[in-house]
Amino acid sequence: MKKLITTVLAVAMAHTLSAQTFTLKSNDLGGQFGNKHFGSSFGCTGEGKSPQLQWENAPKETKAFAITMYDPDAPTGSGFWHWTVYNIPATVTELKTDAGNFSGKNLPEGALNGGNDANAPGYVGPCPPQGPAHQYIITVYALKAPVQIDKGATAAYLGFMLHFNTLAKASIIAYGQR
Image 1 (cartoon, one colour):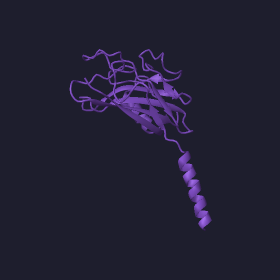
Image 2 (tube, one colour):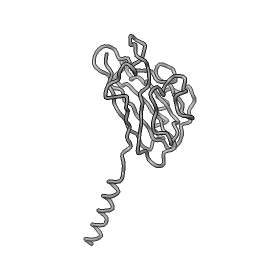
Image 3 (tube, helix red, strand yellow):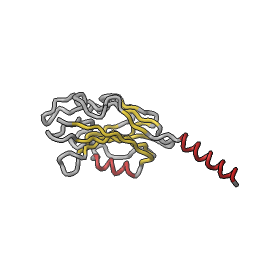
Image 4 (cartoon, helix red, strand yellow):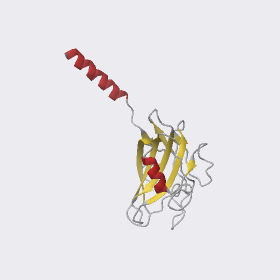
């Protein structure tokens, strides 16, 4: 009995040690958004380039990825969706700086810029009002299947569809302040 318990514990520990966590990282963001990623409206004069993002250890069953960037501190009563991109192929594990360009030309083949709360497909850089820093939650979703939605769908509707299609997700938070 003692040998059986020891074997079961050893197998459980080996499985735990070998399991890797789905992780999102960015070489561009060191905790704060810089002018490169800030928007160029509402008094901001940034370059409006989406940050470089990379992820690792997605579940083996992943068929596609999606990314969202959300500001829960925006003075709207419902936050502000700055960027959504979906149907990133499962073989892709990085988006380069400015992948969220409105042209869509910087995205991997098959990936689509979704709507944001500025009613445009692509990345809208942060431009918080004067005052305390805003947090921007960037999340990558490992999906069971590519998302099937109309091109004009809102970020909230995409979020609804992601909710039922997610195998795993990983997030980072960066801050922006004027």
